[in-house]
Length: 81
Length: 143
Image (tube, rainbow over all chains, first blue to last red; front, side, top):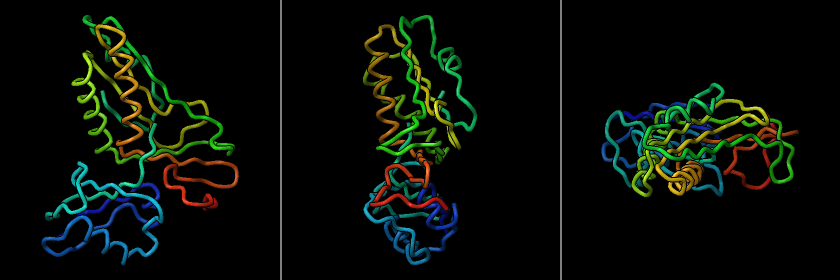
């Protein structure tokens, strides 16, 4: 199955792209997807920061099981305002 | 009104949106762009958002405020893209029958924005730039 990953801010810059379409195994979680992405983009992870996770525009836990065509966002620390 | 925009924000638009006959108070907050941060001389800010989710989260915190305080309406507009020094980056307006609820909900809204809404601020300063909240060690030199 396939999911869409959107990358923003520092993660977008570190990956060099804002959107990734990724083929993943059935039953993969958000955390599994993050591990796969780090192999594809070795510079992606930012040491010392805590990520939040969103699927289809809602915050989820990293053990959330993904479904086909989900939109996944790894959310670096927010700093609006 | 819960919106992310790349255009300048106009306070009157938010005030008009929340002003209803039942309201006896409208509290507003304007976040503006400061020329310094932690000793650095800031030239400009550059905001990026996950727009669909940011607007959803803004609406959610508006709903949450409505459960905590007796407010009439809330409006929040957050700017994205480059924002020059002194320009507003965010505006909030809250109406309520009485001022206590309007002030409290307005304060709550800006604190929640900084905590949960997927918007990121890049500080551009002399000699570099930083995504605020992700600093680890020295700032990265400007690309």
